[in-house]
Length: 153
Image (cartoon, rainbow, N blue to C red; front, side, top):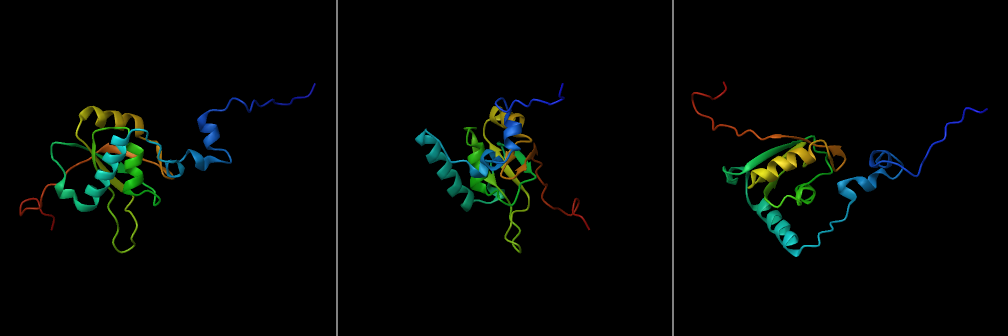
């Protein structure tokens, strides 16, 4: 009797397929933008225009913000927005850039107007690949403005 191990290649999980020879087709960067609803396309275009015009100080303080860590260099604001477009209350996306190198700093922020979308996004997208790396989502912390009492010396 031979001790051959029979491998069933017809039943593979997404994890196994993603680790195979065509792994890049499972990354968000290589997926086509397939949105059937014109309203979502219009909203994403409007959001991208707002992103380019506004700064972090213009964020609505009543919205819920997520910190998106471990972002790869292949991720920009458009890709991050495309990855989160299924959450209708996404109101703003920002990825800070290093002005000397011209690259992103490896993290970003996403704002939601609805707390349910905020929580659902955190649960569903934490650890998922956006671009070439799995992102780490956390509640964003707001910095206090520097005053004489809390300024670091």
